[in-house]
Length: 382
Image 1 (spheres, rainbow, N blue to C red):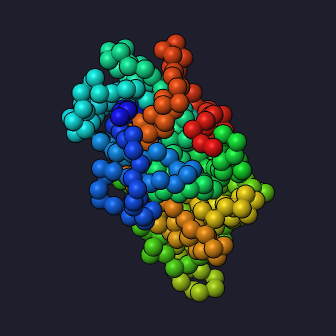
Image 2 (cartoon, rainbow, N blue to C red):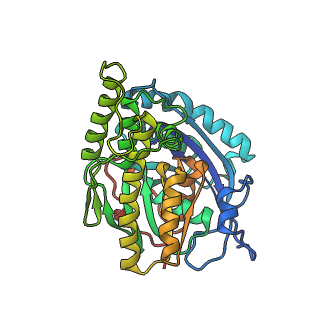
C-alpha cells in the first residue's frame, strides 16, 4: 500500500501530511456530510466512478506564521518560519503516522503557485529529504492538491469547483484530462481582498483575518452599497477593496468627529465595523455564487465543490448551498483541516500522480510562483 509524505508552504502556513492509499475500496462509503465534518481523520473513502482513490490520513500537521494586526506577512519572514519549523513537523508527522523511512514511497511538495521565498524553502526541504532518504520527488500543483483532496474527503463525483483562497480565485470544471478554468479574478484574489481589508480595521491575523471578518460580519445589520464587478465569467476585487477601505477611513474619522457617528441614510442606524464586514462578505460572495452558477449551467453540473482557505466561510457555503438547491443540486465543502492549506492535500495529489508513473527529476525540482491549474495533465481521471 503506497504511502507519501507531502510538504506544503506556498504562503504563511507550513503543512506536513502523510497519506496512505489502500489497495481496496470500501463497499459502504460514508456520506459526504459525515466525511467532511467527522472528527475521525483515520479514513475517508468512497467508490464512485469519477472520485479520487480512498485514502487513509496518517498525519496532518500544520504551523502558521502570523504577523501582527494591521500588517501582512512578508515573503522573507514567512520563508524563515518555514525553514525553522519544517524539520520539527516532519519528525512529528512520522512519529504520529507510525511509519519508518522504508515505508515512504515518494516525497511530494508544492511546486507552485504561491509566494516565491516560502515555496523555495519547502522545495529545498523536499529535495534534501529526497536525497537523504533516496526517495523519488513529485512536484504538485497547489490548486490541483486542493481539488483532489476536496473530492476525496467529500465524495463529490464530478463537480464544478470554486477555488477561493488568499492567492487564487477560480471557477473550474474537469474536461478531457484537464481542470479547465471557466472564470477567475482579473486582479487580486478574494482572500487577498479580505486580508487587506482586515489590516485597515486592525483585525487580528490569528487564527486568520478572513475568519475574524466572518465573526464580525455575523453581527452586521446594515448592507451598504459597494461596486459589483462581475465581468462575464470573471470577477474583479480591487475596486471593491478601494471603496470599502474608504468606508473604513470614514468610519474611523466619524468616531472622533464633532459631527457624530456615521449613520445609514435609509435606516438611520449607526454604521459599525461589523456592518462593513457584513457588506464586504455579502457583495463578494454574491459575485462568486453568480459565476459558479453560470459554470454549472454551461457544463450541466449538479454539484459544487468549494475548496481553498476562503471555502471555510460558513456564509459562503450557505449562499452557495441556496443557489445549488434552487438548481436541484448540492454543495460540498470541507472544514478547516482540509480547506486551509495543508500538507495532506499535497501528499494525496502527489501520490495519485506517482501511481500514474509521474516523477520530478532532481534537476527539475524547482518552484514557480505562476503555475496554472489547467497546465497539469490529469491522467488519473476518465
